[in-house]
Image (tube, rainbow, N blue to C red; front, top):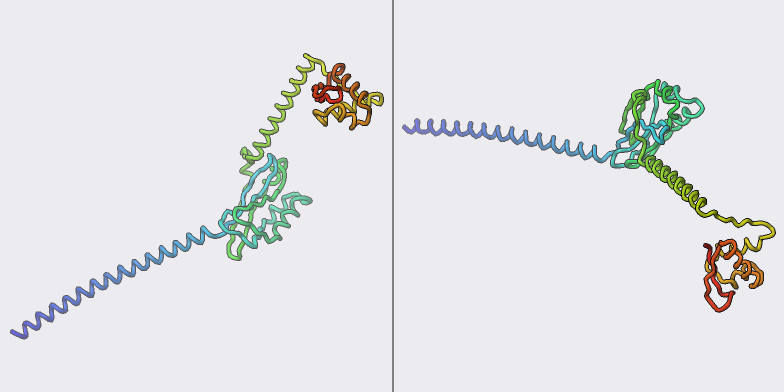
Amino acid sequence: MADWFMVIITAIYVIATIVICVFNGRSAKAAKEQTKTAKQQIEEMIRQYNESNRPYVSVRFEMIRSGLLCLVIENVGSIPAKDVRIMFNKDFLNNLDVIDRQPLLKEVSEASLFLSSHQKLYVCIGGQSKFNEIAKVVAKIDISYNDKYKEHTEIDLSQYRNMLMYTSELEDISHHLKKLQENQKSYYANHLKKLDNDRPVSVLVHSNDSSKKFEVFKTVCIYSGATTAKIAEIVEISKEDTFGILDELENVDRFIRGVPFGKDNYSVQWYRR
């Protein structure tokens, strides 16, 4: 009886051990999977962090100022791009203006550039009048920077041939200001024309015979509110002669007006009408 009891206990122990091992195996597998998942999540977080905290240099085509064809090199990343090198395919370079644009792009290709975050460089490749000629060859551009990043871009300019391209807000403002200026000139021209018709404007002609009169009138314009005595001192003639000229300018020519300020004619203050 004792032997059977020991057999039963041993069997129970073996079964319990097997069950424990099975559960331990499952736990270990689950822990391993959790560790693997956590590792993948950490790697993804690191990748996303590196992607969001790196330079990223791109190139695109833009038409600016209603006619300049440009390749825009921009660092759209969050940190500066160092040792930026830009290479253009030979077919595209050879298709450009030999005297003007080819040397410019070759200089860009030989340069080592620094682009801060969101900084742009505009490389002009020609004017709108030469668009069809420039667009014959696809631009293939290779960009390397920070000793580890490389970008390749191909731009087929011909696809922009029949597209209306928006240039810039500054140009819109420029056109708006120009239109305002033209409207302002038109308004003043019509206003002055109306004044001429309603009331002919007299003009003071500067000649040798009336040089002092002109000098007195100019002094009134410059020193608004000056008295007769002060004007006489400035133009260096007597107060009597000065007042005579001022009186003529007021009552005959009607260019100025006097405001009595004291008891005599020499204290009158003078203003341009």
